[in-house]
Image (cartoon, rainbow, N blue to C red; front, side, top):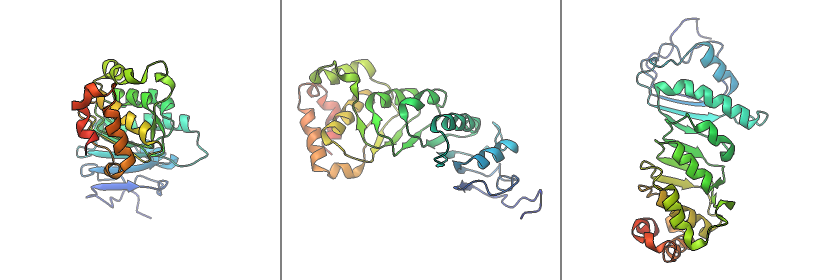
Length: 250
């Protein structure tokens, strides 16, 4: 055990804590505030308690800190919504001195209100989440700096039921576009339904002018790329062919 008050890591630039905080004092954080550039945390309760107790982060305490990666505690006993809400508020206390790069979560529709003031996120990873397209639109709109999003496969959801299929692209472009000029990459983990996913990709492109990149492996999926090209030839998407050509022809 370190002697109380000893600075063990004065030159520390990267700190990754993937377990519950292992010390009874601020050993890991002590004396390196001026040098720390990258922080990765899984927000176990002991880690949160230590950072709060020792007031580790203040708006001007970490001048070189540029990347903060936050993952939720995987403890299944913790209620997701209340836990996430508490943890988001905690992360917001760090955000003034860094750009928050990643937050993992699960139920997007329930979490959307919590992102309202969390506008510094640039990269959002929700790899286990099946996303409703309309919730995803709301999420991107609420995060003006978001450039990269990772999810499971998307679904269109029931919100478009009253809109004729060939009118949906024009409706989305007119109603939502453009929602973000910064958003450019969307990586989704599965192709559960090639046609449905391809439709979501093309619709998203109508709302985000610089969205140009999906998972490289999906460009090698013949069914998916065929669905992309076929949709671009339908009456609904055809008027937007020039915008969509780069996505559908890679």
